[in-house]
Amino acid sequence: MDLILELYWSFRSPYSYIVLPRIAELRDKFRVTIDMRVVHPAAIRNPAYFARMDPLARPYFMKDSARAAAYLGMKFRRPVPDPIQQDTKTLAIAAEQPLARRLGWLGIAATERGRGFEFCREVATLLWDGSVTGWDQGSYLANATQRADLDLFDLEAATNANPDRYDALLAENDRALRAAGHWGVPTMVFEGEPFFGQDRFEVLVWRMKQRGLEPRASSALAGLIS
Image (tube, rainbow, N blue to C red; front, side, top):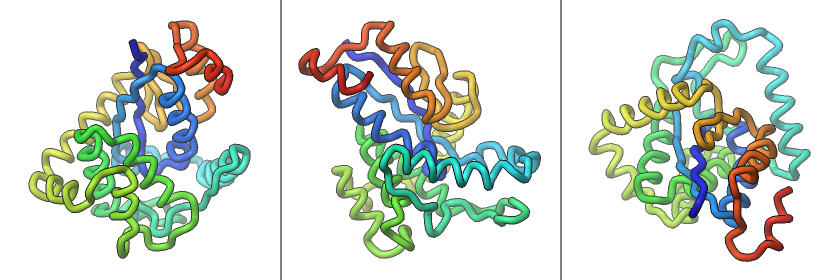
């Protein structure tokens, strides 16, 4: 029987992007099912966070996320455009956030079709690996959706037909994240225990091994994640 891992995740979070390859390896090589829980970015989910943020926090996070990606051999550049409209100096957040809401709705729709993890990984790569400027233009997003074995037109038809429903589902995931014991992403929840941050992945695997984590094919694969 597969172990169930809830993954609370945001398109704007660099650490959410950085953790995905290891989550994919865990899922593909071990008996683990990912329960994908896309949430609003913190600027929507918890705007007060930026109001009380220490001035040193944002510069440090930007340096650390680039460093963490480099350490793991991942390409990295902050998305252009940023999914959140925010003043980089004052951190004031715009009232309307069409890009972030679009991504969130699409992530929920993809999850409902059983391809949420694949969609999030492809789109996160599009946003964060630095290969594309203007990810929201042209066919970039459609191509990423296709790589996840989904159709962008189908997803957007569903979300545009009932945007209030998708907003409500995102808000429900926001509440579930806090109920699980944290407020940030990525948060991985296993058997009710939250593991916050990409740097807690190895501790998560340690806990799952205690609970009987099994390889999908042969015991030799288990050595690939120690």
